[in-house]
Length: 217
Image (cartoon, rainbow, N blue to C red; front, side, top):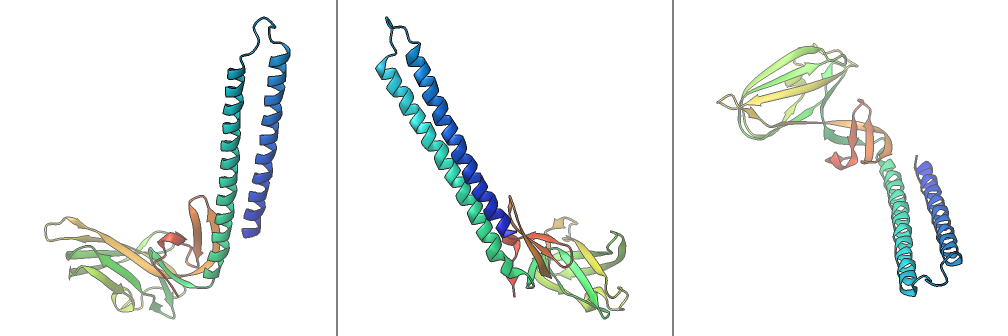
């Protein structure tokens, strides 16, 4: 992946250089033609010619600078992807309540409440998007809480080897919504470089931005 990105940036640089050369040739051709066919009784004003050449020089420098900046951005993106490849095989904590069941035991999910909740509803979905269970909690304080085997799978009803997704909703004593965030651990299986930045693909299928990873072990 990183080799392709570096190769791409090199190609981009070559293309920009070629376009710049063509522009110079076009300008010189137009200038020569203008001088060749000018009216002897009304020649091109020297000041105007100098202004045209100055404007062209400024434009050429701007184009050259932009091309160099594009190359630098491509190289930095490739370098970032190369450095991020060290995450492959590592466990990271990222947004999303994903539960993996191994030998009948559900993995942990961290739930964060923005404020105290009078009631909390947690729906458990299977890989097909069907609700397989709903958990209800009351009088839950604000902050981080761990949802694991005891909270999600006390009767070991979830199938081993399957991956489930949690969705939660919390309400205060007036029935108003409270902010809820879910995070869980996944193992990085691949790294890619996108226009938005470096993206990590996890073993549970999640694709998360490197910027959104809160912890890596």
